[in-house]
Image 1 (tube, rainbow, N blue to C red):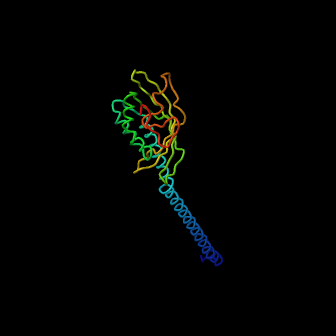
Image 2: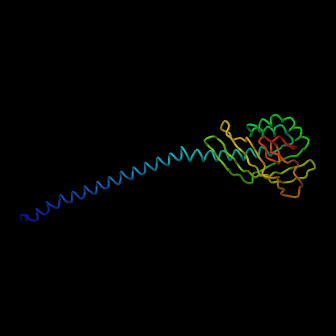
Image 3: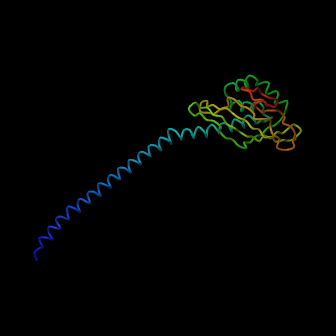
Amino acid sequence: MSPDPAEQVTTERAAPASSRVRTAVTAAAAVLLAVSLGAALWFGVGWARAAFLTDGPRAEARDSALDGARQAALNMTTMNIDDVPGSLATARSSMTGAILDSATKNQQQAEELAAQAGVRMEAKVLGASLTALNSEEDKATALVVLQVTEQRKDATAAQFRYTWTLDMTQVDDVWKVEQVASLGQPVQLDGGGAPAAPGAPGAPAETPAPAPAPQPGS
């Protein structure tokens, strides 16, 4: 049977229309794909820029500065009475600038006073946080709270809480203290008596000073 001429014309007209629809759908999909790829590329580049050029280095500097402040505070509140010179050398290793100059200048006096006091000191960090950070200039300020245990010659022991602010600066990739100040006097945590000294190895006096001199027991 011969095809109906009218039906053949209808089919021929429908075919181009269907083709045009498929072409439009394909073009739209291509546009959406291009937009998606462009957005992914844009956000990917933004993420990489933030991770590697801005947020990443700043977070690394923050963590490093805080770790340096914790370690410096521990070094400056620790005294092994069997190795006074070594303990004070460890404290100085965390210092820079004027505070290091002062500790170095008074090194012999500090060793003599520490030996005479005979107080063994051990410390642990109760809490620490950065209160300021300038990663571009390698500067930071930290607040550190310490628990310091003092063991005296008569075998009595006492615990105190110290609260310090430490101005830190990065020297040869190591964060060091350039200034330290005590926020108030040490707080007694037990009934062991008054602290053997207002400070510790390299610690500040009761009144903050830019370059505190070594204290008795330091």
